[in-house]
Image (cartoon, rainbow, N blue to C red; front, side):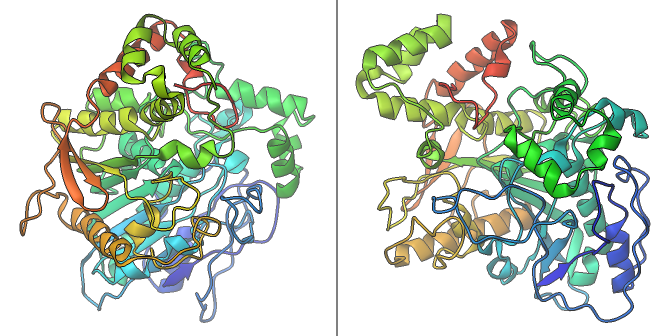
Length: 527
């Protein structure tokens, strides 16, 4: 593993200079900063060159973020955070002159938390399968997704927001220039991510700035096929994000950009988190010139093979925190559905009946989430319509030690993909794992990681050696169910995708789609 970092002097909110160029200098590799480099925060002073051997024997700090609740399912060992957080990690067993497929991991965390340093993202096992594994860090929260009119005015592109996406684009540019030095093939790059990391994958696939930077895309439990907000324009009665953030800054008594820059990083984070501000990528007219879904529907996205899927019990983990409230009585459930679904209520109650309120509500949450059935199948379907191959899965495997009854919860597939299912030392497992890992768990992990590697290598999972994972098409609609075994099911959720498509169109027509956008701190019955 090679962890490459930069270490500027500590300071206030500021811009990213070419830390990737510094890495290239350190490695003795020619590198020129692309003309679309990030110039939107105040420029920092030039970084000194490294003059000696640098030991990359530890992970760098995570991006600035508030700690996750300790003593809960989501808690993990504290990791240092810093503004100096932009780095990439490389795992490779390649020999000089090799040209191995490259897999680039983008971590999740709702764009407000996460780190490449989590043990479950260790790339050793995947690199052992003849790929070069890279993980990219990117700015989060206010540091990664803050929009403000003053920032737009000082930007060469006239935009603000999406700084976290800009970091990821810069990392992908660095990979194109330099990954061959680590035995990687710059013409065979796969980006993959989970949750917010998968949102980013779909956003990068939609961005015109990513042309030629990657060649396959994998999304695990997340996509941006729902309605997005705009930095500068109204979307379905939702205020421009620049206006929302400027109003927050005024209420926080730091109305001007120079006032914000006078805050230390920790002070800015504390004020942002105290007001429970969320971070989100926005339509900015540059990195994302339009809604991600609109870009896909117009066929203007990067037409690369896609592997997309979700977990059968997505809401269970976050629902344990009360983020998905469920009515106790069937009558209350029916009343809520009728108030929310309007003309689609009868169809909704047929597919999600009131005879088992909890099961129906949780399945509806799953199928309507940004990372559930409707958004993930939309991703595959639109990619298919543009002539690019897609494969779709549902991960339904329940860990052998599922003592909390969470099933195949959000994030449960990660240790299987990375080949670390036997290691119970990450944020996925501290509270969940108490029993032994079975041979079936290990065998499933081997097979699943093999599929991810094969897709990254070949861009397809069609039948070979007797194993058939058919490509998605909207007539047959084959899903690979990854459970106790791998099993193809055609159209396993009849009527549900169609329902949510109609609901989506209705919400847009009524200009109330903003209420359907996933917001984990919003409460309410989000369908």
